[in-house]
Picture 1: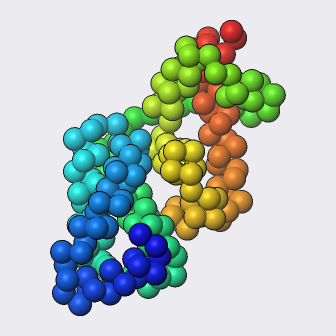
Picture 2 (picture 1 turned 120 degrees about the vertical axis):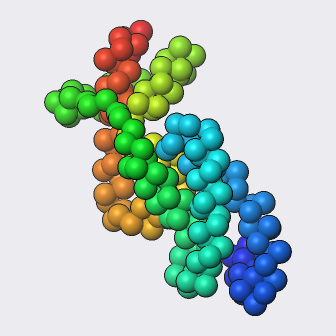
Amino acid sequence: MESQNEMDYIRRILDGETALFSSILARYSRPIHSMIYRIVPCREDAEELTQDTFLKAFRKLGTYKGDSSFSTWLYRIAYNTAISATRKKKYEFPLLDENLICNMSDEAVDAILGNEDEDLMQQMEKAIELLDVEDKALLTLYYTEERSVSEISSILQLKPDNIKVKLYRVRKKICSLVNSKGYGSR
């Protein structure tokens, strides 16, 4: 669905053709659910939050002004919904030693993240599960959903430079977690 086509659908939905919202659901439900599931570690919660996201989007559709792409607007709703839910449930995440993160060289990060060893890849997945929700969302948007830095900036409502710094730091966090488990020394 192209952006112009989406605007036409939105206009028609707002004019009463609410059944057209199903095409928006069909296009975005899988990627939205994927992002939420990366943030919220419970499948049932992720499914419920995905439904909440689309319900909110449907109710707020009249507020969409087209300042950003529709997908950016929808991802922002999904992100805020998921983050709010995690704050309510008070998920706990391990504290990382900031000195370990800061002292990790870029070469060490590249060596770990560039390694395609199966065991190491599994350990990176486990490390990602230990990250806080904002970091998981950032990784999902950038690496899984392949969103640009500027689009992520709009979704998370942060400056592009902040997004770049956060991506840099989260890569180091993953490597610190892998190293702390002893898997980075292969």
